[in-house]
Length: 138
Image (cartoon, rainbow, N blue to C red; front, side):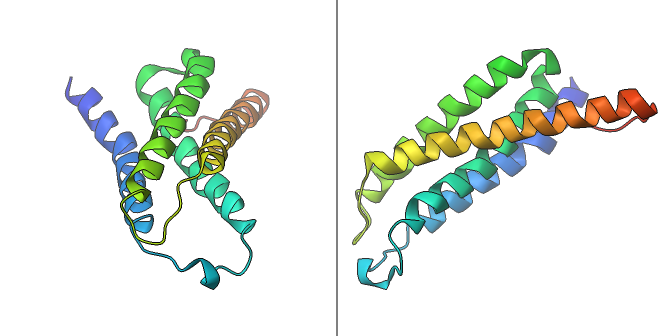
């Protein structure tokens, strides 16, 4: 039981702290005229939620188990979608911030990309370990 709590703390604390960072950053009021290129907005959403998806599936698979990879990707996508919805709802109350369904879509795509990237990294590492007989952490 203690080992499980340590794993949860070790893997889910970065997820929680990163979610807090997203919340804090979205609390800043932005003047639309100060944004150089509006299309960068979607790229930034995808990037920040890719990191969240990566951290989330890392935590999920290291606490639930590697045999749940597909479920982990799906859970990560749903998690990114819900966090994106929460973030956009939060921005309703921030002056000069705009709520956009496109942002939620970009967040969801980012969550998928981050979790998929983690699965690819796992696959490459396991193939390398199988080939060379190395032992490493997931």
